Image 1: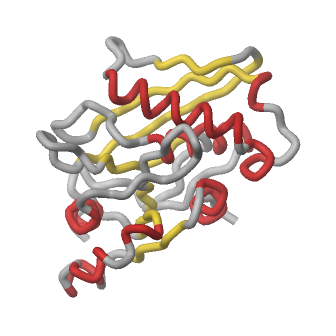
Image 2: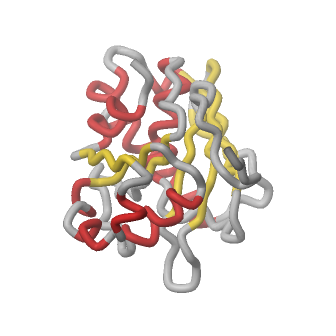
Amino acid sequence: ELHSDDAIETDPLPPGQVWAISPGGQDAAPSLYRIEATSGPGSGVKILNVPVPPAFRESVRYGEQNLYSQSKELIGDRDPRSHEFSVQLRAMDTDRSGQGLGLPVLLALCGTLMERSTKGGLIVIGALNLGGSVEMIPNPVAVAELAVEKGAAQLLMPISARRQLLDLPDEMATKVNIVFYADPADAFLKAILE
């Protein structure tokens, strides 16, 4: 089988690492990223990218706040405030903004804390707000097409994108398994390896 250089690996990533697609914005197309998080004793979240893209700083802030506010549902009895997290964004496409990656950041933080890997070939999509809601994706079909192009086996999407994805062409829809989630805790359960 041909393997393109920019295709994602189908093996599970180490705990704390997540493949993600940013839906992009007015001036940016959807883009693939790899988010890598580690944790140790301490508190807070450090972003290792220099300089930090402002949109990614916001994604990390939303991911961090949701980790604290929903820690019971996400990670049980563990206390995320007694850990210091380091997060790095690796851009795989031309866009390097890191916009709309709150949910993948949250799953990376949970993964490193719980020492759980995400499933192989999985790409996660979702922008969070501070209240814990997942934002609407403006262009789910373009996001799904990019995921297929990158060799994803599975795509984790917010349930709000389901109706629009009926417009995904048949030849794309048969190449990727789209799994929908209702909220961040549901997304984490569906993302991690059993």
